[in-house]
Image (cartoon, rainbow over all chains, first blue to last red; front, side, top):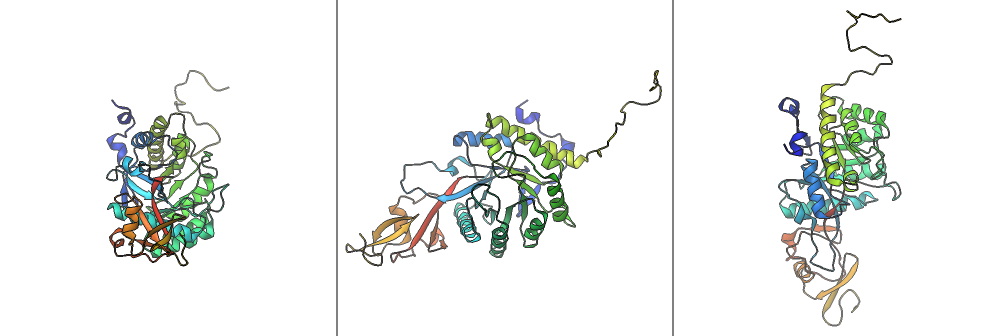
Length: 285
Length: 78
């Protein structure tokens, strides 16, 4: 039995609807970034081990000094992975809209099935990489009007999250903690409120936690709370053994989703015995 | 090579590509520029003065000099 088979859900466990976002049906609830890997070959192995079928990519200037350089697209099977362009590195709504349109054109030029979507980031500053909420709202409105399915990176603020959905975002993607920080889910209660607001009367509205994952239990925690998916990059790419961590993330995502669907027991202050009271030969003192 | 409004004495024009000056013969199209830069057949998207130009319109887009051009591709990112 291969490693991947060992953690695949059994038939009865897999009775779950796929994640549908921006018109795309995704088999995996893990979306994986393609940045920061030591080599393209390692990236490709990690993507395989993660089980993902959707990866993010960034848009950057082509190098004018043509050194027969490899392109990431040489290492990404576009038939296997839906490519989700991001607007990473944009600090204004105007820049993010430009980058989104360039990413869309790149996908159109490739004949991609996913050309009308974008992972929108409008950042506030370089130190925290926290989202600029005003710029994020402005860019969301413009990109929705331009026909994009907007998957929007935002803070865990429930009010901003609701406003982004009201503007027509295809998915609201609250951060667990700052990008690349590995701090995990800092405010589970805010995520709970985001989920409650965004799914009120619309239970299939996709909420994806984007950023901050440090290790597998962070992914499981987010999925147990009812998030529809997790987007991560650094936690795999900079792990000591990235391919093994990719497998851990895959297993954690499945485990968290199954636990959410199964429904956890309530937390109680005091113990409840698992063995029967009847028939004991000794009595509590 | 500067010649006023982006056209120099040797019948060349100057455009800005990805922040740097590039010259091209007067009468060049966007297609010619992309070929000259070695990007033909590569996965790129092109923006001229803020507008995305689809590849099918490269040949019909004639350069006048002074254009601000961005040529981008995909790289790894999260």
